Image (cartoon, rainbow, N blue to C red; front, side, top):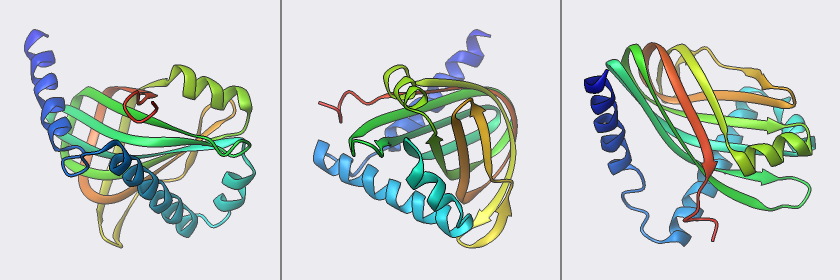
Amino acid sequence: MGDTMKNLKILISIVLSFSFLFASSVSDKRKEVLQDSKDSLSMLYKLYPSSKKFVSSSYGYATFSNIGVNLVLFSAELGRGVAHNNKTGKNTYMKMVSGGVGFGLGVKDFRAIFVFETKEAFDFFVEHGWEANAQADAVAKSDNKGGSLEGAITVHPGIKLYKLTKNGLALQATIQGTKYWRDDELNY
């Protein structure tokens, strides 16, 4: 198990090293996260037109842009995003990381969009983060070609999740731990 954790840490380090390579200032990073959020919502509304009303009438939402890497027995995902409170207009910048073991091969660029139906669900996510485990999916997508298994699922009472694949080719069935938390660097 020691080699497994060591290899997983190396994999996560490689993914981290490419993250935000060109965004140097806090202001640049915030702009990039907000643009990714806007792009993710546009993608969601195009695929699921009824989601626009659901998102706008919710207490808040969080969007994450993620890169996932699966190398045979190890997988890692890394991303940044923003939680937006529809009632106050406040943005909270966040990070996510995921690592796991199991069968997988490929790389994917995907979007995660959480929709919070209640203040309690939103506040808990922003203040305490969120953890999830286990994952299985198949993705084959390049630009607008291909498809994936996508749609909204209830991940917790009052929280729906849309997971949209932008580009990638991956097949995985892993035991995966995922953690979302506040980004101290961008939330000064």
